[in-house]
Amino acid sequence: MQLPLKTLLSLFICLFFFFKSAEAQKIYIDSLNHLLAQEGITKELRVNVLCKLAKANFEKKLPLSFKLADQALQVSAGLKDGESKAMTYATLVYLYVWKKDMKNAYQSLDSAMYYAKKTKDRVTLGFVWFRNGWLDLVNDENDKSITKMFKALDFFKGENAYEYESAIYHYLASFYGYGNNPSKQQKYADLCYLTAVKSQQVDLLNNAYFTIGQAFFDRFKLDTTKRNLLDSTLKVYKKSLWLSKKQEGRLLVYSNTAAVALNTANTYFQYFPASYRDSAEKYVDEAIEIATKTNLLEVLLNCYGLKSEYYVRDGNYDQAEKILLTGLSKIENGVVKMPLTKSRIFQGLSNIAEKKGDKAAALNYLKEYIANYKKAFDEQKINNTVRIEAQYQSEKKEQEIAYLHQQSAYTKKLNVFYIISGLAGILALLFLLISYNYKLKASVRKQELIDQQKDAAELKAQLKEAEALQLKAEQALLKERQERLEKEVLAGNLQIEEKNELLELISDKVNSESHLSLDEQIKRIVNQQKKMDKEFEEYKIDFFDTNPAFFERLQEKANPTLTRLDLKYCSYMLMGLTNKEVSIRLGIEPKSVRMSRYRIKQKLGLSKEDDLNLFLQNIG
Image (cartoon, rainbow, N blue to C red; front, side, top):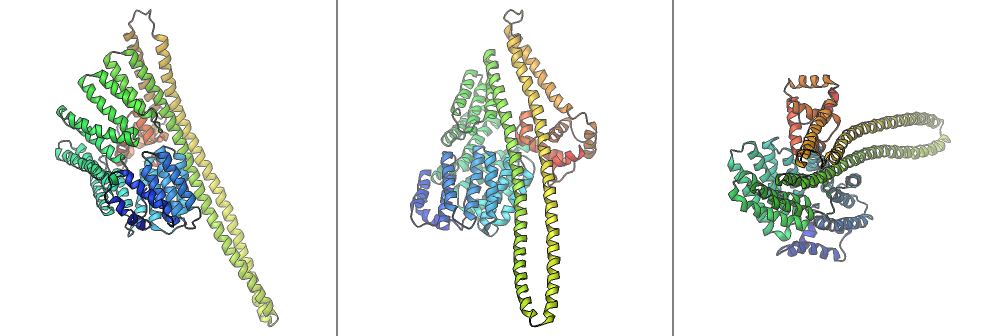
């Protein structure tokens, strides 16, 4: 997390001399620790330093980052203004997502939003909304995320919070990437760079180079004949790598540098002849070095996967297999588990073993692939359940807080009214002794009191009605979640049962006394499995074929331009599956699903603000 400029002005002055000749990241962390050890610093500054230390350590020492965030919460406990608490809880959102603990991430976001209402600091408010939108982005809710990102930018206007603005422009550029809107992607990539320069922060400038390079690369993929765009991509990527080495002592986040090195290596692998292999291996080795130091296990596995691909090209299957097994051993003891990534590695190992002719090894790797894929599938179901529950609790709390605010405001008004009425009564009794005319006025005031109490009773009745509507909405939300989970369980159980049947079939059908060879028996079983997979996919589509009117109405809306694959995507979306779930089932990248959603919305004549899922549900 980056902290507010105006709050940390004194901090940057104190740290200037430490950064002037920095040679390693340790200097930066030691400088923060030195400032933290000083006596007499304010609680607000202490909280900011602790949050900055938490961000500085999260890649290498995630448990330490949580410990520092807890210390920040303890220090901020005695502060009346919600600024420090809001910033700390927003920091915890980032840390919990990194840990893949979505339940606590949403709880931290609720706390951050609560304390944000207790401060008027615009930078703090903007940062909390930024983290709110970022969490939506993590969950592939791009439409909600964009709205919140722009709201955060409104808070940052005129506050010189360039580091936050640069990060938001980076995400806005990514929204329009992958060919969705190249002009907007380039616009926000340029703004990301300009605000990064103004911030004078190395991490943000490094991130800006990454963003601009990705914009060039996405435009190149739309027309691969424009090699100048590919050259521009590599030029910007190399600027990022040079900056990371030159300013190593001021760099906090290495994930972007590792990703740039890996992307550069992959570019040489995909779009350059074999003579550029040395260049690709040079950059992939850089990525491995960074990923190993900073525990970026996802990047590390992808690096070993790329190195293995070169050996597969050469026909050196033994070395290709060895490289992948080395990558698996590197992540074995990692804090964050990655069953989906591991399943892809085992799938690659199975393919390599099959090319080698080692059917037994291929079968064992296939079993590992199935086991890890099942873990990933189960983990995704659990994460979806936790996310839905967290969102439900968050919305419920927001409604409860709104009701409490209304009740509190009403109570305050009522108390003020009672005080005024009491004073009026006392004055009425005093003036009653003086004048009969005042008695008449007192009678009028009494009647006004009765009318106001009547209004108060009507307001209470309205509040009870609002509670009933709220309960009804909660029941509808629970019913919707239950139906969605039932669909996911149905689809998941079918796939698991088919995979288990394959394993039993292999053990039962492989017969040493058969007239067929072992290779022929296994090939026959594998062909049966492929047929079962195809039938399984057709069954999922047929799940919605019982309502053919749905597809007729859908094609009418598209005039009719929807392909069979488009209708398949629509079926999955009507089932309530997320982009990640669809990508897992189809074996494609989530970004491909996002592109398909964008294409379908265009065919249906929907604008970017329209919700495609809601549109399909209304038609269904």
